[in-house]
Image 1 (cartoon, rainbow, N blue to C red):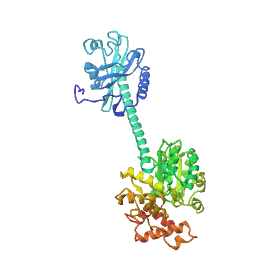
Image 2: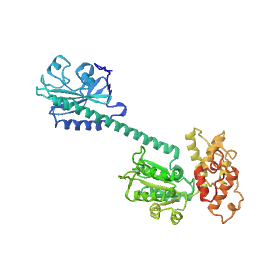
Image 3: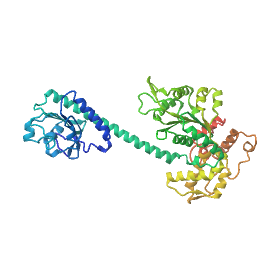
Image 4: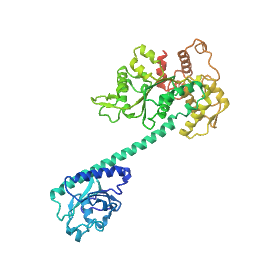
Length: 505
């Protein structure tokens, strides 16, 4: 490592072409340097302007401009043989190299490459920013007169500005590299944790096949999509599949669970807030897809702002008067009848009609029992990737028990039940003894469940009441009603409120 002649040494950037990825790609950096040297020619004349960057123990030509530039490509200088250049880098001051420096000191940096006359104009300015020194800028002329002091000062300042530009470009390149890495990582996480479209595309259920026949053409458009269906039917999985089938597949897929965010904070989450460190979900999803889960939870005022985004692509963050434009494909999900919400004045009709241009209804699990075996296989494979417990499968007896159940929590309830079975079962084979299906083999004989005239709400209400009775009113925790039903506690509480059930103490 070079040492400074007086005081602590600056940090010399070794191998600037790599610099741990913090310097921009070759073409980008060279374009920046060429434009900088061309602009410098308007201020001070030269026959050769050269950017040398530190490359290990050498200074190597990175960019050169002027009539003599073509002859110095690839030229490198061993730093140990050029104390004048080292001094300029260590003192961070520009200096003029005179005939005596070349004759009795280092020699000319271009000896053996260019035939420059003795006493020709030569100027060296260090490229430094912060604690890093990147190299030197040299100017050469064939005339035998020294650069004026005012020119030396100007070039010294210009070289520092150029070094700051190199540093800034390097930081931008590093951020871009991290962004690409994060993007790849996010795509892997989506596939690992949320699953892809495999379980949908291989469905044997006629209802699912009809749904996919509609979903595929819709995915190729940019129109909003409304996904309807009971809790746990796989609406988010279908939303991710729509994104993956679209031309936006390589762009961000961003989710906002509206029910999980307090109503007062939803606007900041969606639109962002001026001065906040984290942008809103709309900006994060720019170029890609935004999933609004439980869209019915949006306050009416925010529904109007969302409608404006759908119609114009513009919005203002909270506390900002500046409009921001985005290109976002919106997918919304709901478990309620939005037409009833519109009639009750809780949902804007214009937003509903905009969202419902392409409604897709996901069938509940009880209407696609043909997929039970395949779903178990796919869910256990995902579970194995997450937990390392690979090779699990459901026995025929286990499938028989699963087929006899009504699945009010749908695919999510099935996934939770299989996860419990994987934890409890010591063997890869999951049979009836570890598949703790509520109600066992047959549906309870409750009038609400058995009557032909029972509505879906009646069935759900009776099932929740029975589960609460089994858990003595306990919603949270292991073995609580939410876990038994395969629901989040907040989702269960919301459903109880909609069904007119009071939360037990």
